Length: 178
Image (cartoon, rainbow, N blue to C red; front, side, top):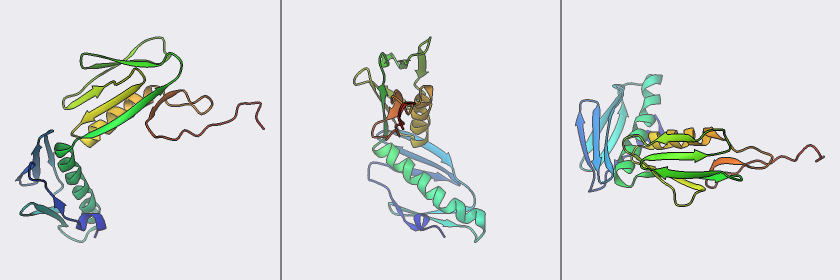
């Protein structure tokens, strides 16, 4: 059994959980998330604590045990506090701006790159070199931040590109370095 899967998930008082078979809906101040969980994992409710147990001792059931618990925990945390990914643009002339719900990037390409905010996700641009992606769904926030970063990954020689705040970029010497 998974060590993470054994830990119970405590649900805060401002979050409600509705279970309909293996479909779980979590509602909170930051939004509402719905997900269908695997039939190999049994979800048990005890007041405001939820525990997860595999149905049997197969490899598939035990691998879904910790995964289901982590997904449920991320759903509860997302609707309670939300998730944020912060990105930073480094490079001469690199900038970001918000046009309505659209994020427009100018990163040294011949055209502007635009990202439309999906439902439940919002952008914030505190300065023209900083981007914050907010949302309740951890997977969507992380995927959108990764797609933004993929437009212009940081290069190792000058460090130009889009990177996460706090991300360490391995630098290389140029061709004159020995």
